[in-house]
Image 1 (cartoon, rainbow, N blue to C red):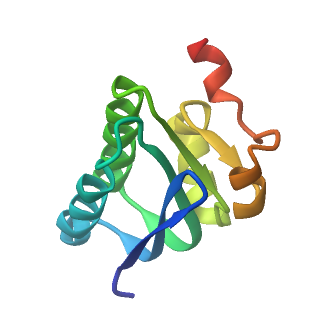
Image 2: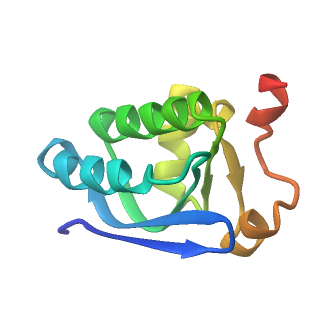
Length: 123
């Protein structure tokens, strides 16, 4: 499945929706969308993974770099709507503890309690 990425502003967030599989061959497309999301002084990135079927180490690296960059700028980075395979990959790599992970886009936008409270560790 080819990769599709959309980027939208919703409330104070830049929502990056990933559709398909993120692997080394599609790394540049995701990297470009992430770079373009860093226009705000304090970026608030939210990755909607509702339709992401798979992510490899290159994609995980991009998410980690985006989170690190956002936090250095005084912003945030969170994930929502993980499907079973990406959720398992995040759990196996320990990255589920590095991100606030929300069950739904609505929960993330409302900043309701995350499934994974990574931001608590940052305080």
